[in-house]
Image (cartoon, rainbow, N blue to C red; front, side):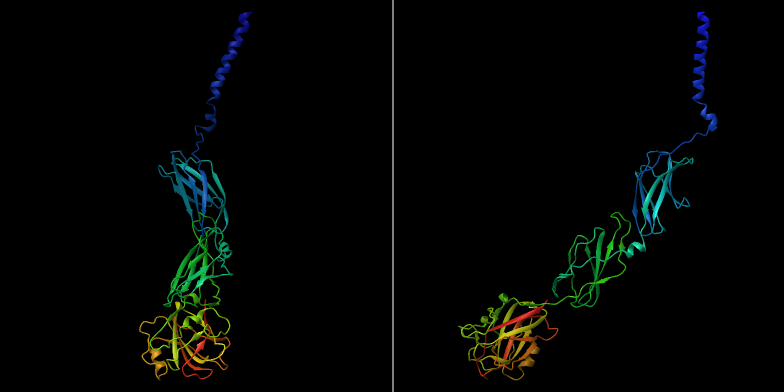
Length: 403
């Protein structure tokens, strides 16, 4: 009884063990000894956008059997092959000739037997072109104050902060020699100095951008913009820099009423001694000279205020020069030929002023257009209101420069 039960049980166990051993290998019969082998897949895929092109970047697989990588797009109608290199951690595929579009790429690795990896899909890869370029605008100028300074010595342009994708702005201008020149202002700069700039000529600029910080290419705005024309303002010359100068044949002044009284800041006619008062040692026409303390390149006008009573100039010349070395005239101001000699020495007649009143009240006069650089002023007084032969008086004189 016991043996009859045990024998069938042992037989069942043996059949089960034989069956399990068979299942472990029977899949090969169905594959006909052609089992599927996958190569290592790519990882960490990124891209760098460009102008009608892109570059895919990925981490190389650790699978040493990989022979090449293939990048597909356009429903696998197009592809590029990237050869695997020993000990190369990063692979790159530069793909040119694309359209401005968002692409999907598929990357697979292959070994030399044709085995391939599971595909990796890189989606929404952007490619840029003319549509993107047309959307770009030149960097904004600080309209409230486009120029930090504007002169032959120093011209500085003033911009607002740019967009974060701005790379630089190219500035085109004309040099004093007439040659064209360019400079760049970086995205981190607000102001830029324009060296050797020819005042009054056009300044244009064009900005360059990257759609992403790692982009292959920079994109330029289609057209240059013109920098706002400089709006000149008449700026009063700094009288704190003025100093007395006496050239040969200039008239002396009374000790109580020196020449420096002419730039003490008066706005109304004053009386003796708070004025300039000549001594009667030099006949009219006679000259006075002073140093404005710095060179001005665009003097525009001046104001003269007379004494509150008498001896006020009503006909006088204002001359200017930037350096008085060898600028003294040998002729006296009341001699014929003095004007020609002054011009020969480098002086420029800035204004030939004539007053038809008594010369007392403040009166404004214009300087010649396009004046030269001037630091030193020489005033030649030709006639006073009371036709005084030797004495001349004034309360104040003020100059302005266009900046």
